[in-house]
Length: 106
Image 1 (tube, rainbow, N blue to C red):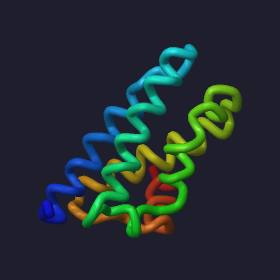
Image 2 (cartoon, rainbow, N blue to C red):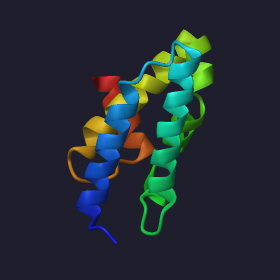
Image 3 (cartoon, rainbow, N blue to C red):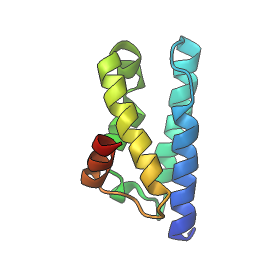
Image 4 (spheres, rainbow, N blue to C red):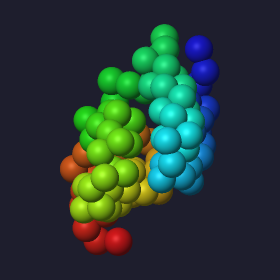
């Protein structure tokens, strides 16, 4: 099993890459979900960080089709995930409350 620091860095990298993907086309959306599945598999693997990740991250990984149609929902989720990824840089998996507080302050 990877050390926690390595798992946090990997999650940071995977989510950062996922946030940069374009979901405006069918192909882009399909590719996004392939990568999102990779993130989910990483989170749920033995020793994965899944149990520590806020519920909104799981929604982000499942809701790209909704974000593509609903700009307000997209903005809300994107802000949360950006804050989550930024806070991962501290070397800890942040709680939902700390992410919300950071996203509000940023």
